[in-house]
Image 1: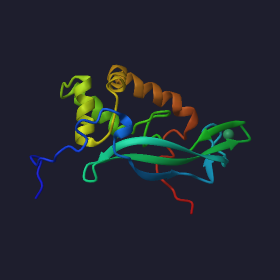
Image 2: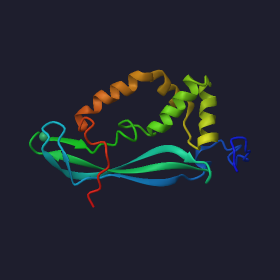
Image 3: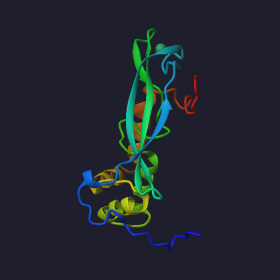
Image 4: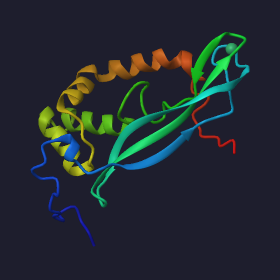
Length: 172
Ligand SMILES: [Zn+2]
């Protein structure tokens, strides 16, 4: 049985360049819909195009590799309101973010609750979770604190169905 005390040699010891890190395992996620209700008028709006975003997630320790989410999501156009909006991916990450909520909350917890310095937290995330986060990024997250998620939630209200579109519905 493997326990927390198990010692695994760190194959990345001595690696200093990001390019030298093990290649991430890609996990696909879909938030791609034919129609979505318009956040403004609630009429059904057709998909205008499909876009992809990459999100760095907590890694795969057993495979010793990072994990990237490749999220495919639809952008919709409401001809009634003449607006474009995205299918909701807020369950995974903040808009425009490069890391999932899970990574951000883990990083913030390491600093705020465990009291680790930023650089140590960065190393910790790599060693224990196989996700590479520059320490300055962690610093930004911590300094933004609760303000950031509140502001982001507010900002994204125009582009989402205000919590209505949280679940994954597969149209195929
Ligand atoms: Zn509309």
